[in-house]
Amino acid sequence: MTGEGADHGEDRSGVVRRDRFSGGPARGFMSSLAADERIFAADLAVDRAHVVMLAERGIVTDGVAGEILAALDDVESAGHGSLPDGEDVHEAIETAVVERVGPDGGKMHTARSRNDEVAACIRYRLREDLLNAIEATIALREALVAVAEAHVDTVMPGYTHLQPAQPTTVAHFLLSYESAFARDTARLLDAYDRANRSPLGAAAFAGTPFDVDRERTAELLGFDGVVSNSMDASAGRDFLAESTAALATHATTLSGLAEDLVIFANRGFVDLADEYSSTSSIMPQKVNPDTLELVRAVAGDAVGGLSGLLTTLKGLPRAYNRDLQRATPHAWDAVDAVSEATAVVAGAVTTAEWPAETLEAAAGEGFSTATGVADALAMAGVPFRTAHEVLAAAAERAQGETPDLETLDAVAADVLGESLFAHVSRERVEAALDPVESVASRDSLGGPAPSAVADQLDGADASLAADRASYDGRTDALDDAAESLQAEVDTYA
Image (cartoon, rainbow, N blue to C red; front, side, top):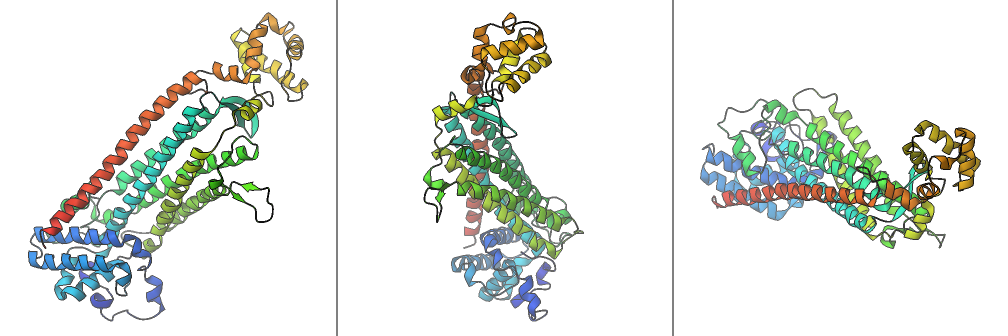
């Protein structure tokens, strides 16, 4: 994935560089050929589009273009492992073409540099990887919605600071993550759109005197347009930073869900399927949520990769610097690991069991319905801060457990100077103390009440449909471009 000095074969090894700078340990240190296997197919596509454009513009003859394109087909059939030694995949492919075609094979590199070539290859491959990540997030969201639909009425404890806070439902809990993952999807779609611009034709950084058609190569490769400034096109890697940042953000959200599931499994609130657990090598009774623990670690890797990438980029002057060879692997590692972790979490969510009786029994622990009683008093005209004082005193007197009506009434008399039931009925207080009734009362927009959750499910379905359509549209566009490019290549056969 190197660049620099590649315009018209300048500073090339093998056939195209001959013997200059060909020895010493630095050659191996600088080589990215093995790692470039990831962009082997991308480079072949970029080569084909460039050669077709050169022929269309009369820069090379149709006959030479046909020979080069046929040689590229042969190189593709032989595979990356059959490439000759070289500093990178771009050089190795060109060397292989020259070996097959003769000197005219070197015309494939007319009007370009490895700088714009590698930038085009990275963008070409990254957009495929981003689409895979986007599809994984959509599948995860679909899994969360499906489980939520089955648990609209399943009451469970809700927490802040890992302390019992207020009752909620499994559906409300899962949809809280679905909405966060929807934002992750949007960020990845945005990153895709900015990555899907062609730098090809920018050459080393200062353009070319040849009459090239940059828009044509962009069209042939399925890019949405070009990066207009040639220096920015060859040097810019902010699309890598944006994509890795979106992936790191998504991984952080994944880690939060994984952590919640690990804690819930520990408390008996969720039963993870055996496929997403493992046993101990020494303790036969143990069932460990190992896959979800690894998901948490992936977030650390992704954030570390983003930090490494930004640190590499932050000190680079324009236009091209070899440091960039070390930048791209951070994005590859992140997109692979985060996409895999997303699929794992989707599977864990889909196959998990939520024990309704256990969850409902725990939903009222720690006097989690205290806010409901305070709200009832406030609705009856007691200032909320005064109502809060009543319930705080009751919680202290009951030592963190749910107080009975007599305790509540006695505390109210101390704080308010009159009976609790002078403000609210016994029935209203009893309902507020019941976790199921407490949840049902919280029917504000986005709340856990079944009616509010039904609206959230409708919104999630609509958002998923829109994002699925966006994903399909981008995928179809790339497929159509690949077919069009192949059709153009076939005309030179």
